[in-house]
Length: 131
Image (cartoon, rainbow, N blue to C red; front, side, top):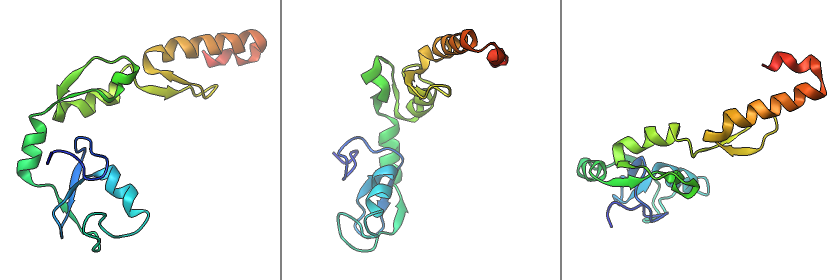
């Protein structure tokens, strides 16, 4: 349980802790929480950031975790310290089309953009420079 964020209850991601109560949080979770006030959500004292405990980081690095994009079909599981790089490159990550602003999976992006540009090209031949 000590590998879980005190706020989101998921495995800690980019953890940091309150220097007063020593409770660990995901960087995103505590940053979002501090937008509401500068107090630690656990001890209610002024939040002072401290680095995560080294033993916690070591234990996190031993964990095997699923890609966050498993909800979109990714089946990759990797060590905690390697998953972030995978997720940045994952073909199941959602992207927004630069042309029509539709959200699509990265694996379909090039096909989508090529279709979109061809469609625009047929409507207006002056846009052929998009290729």
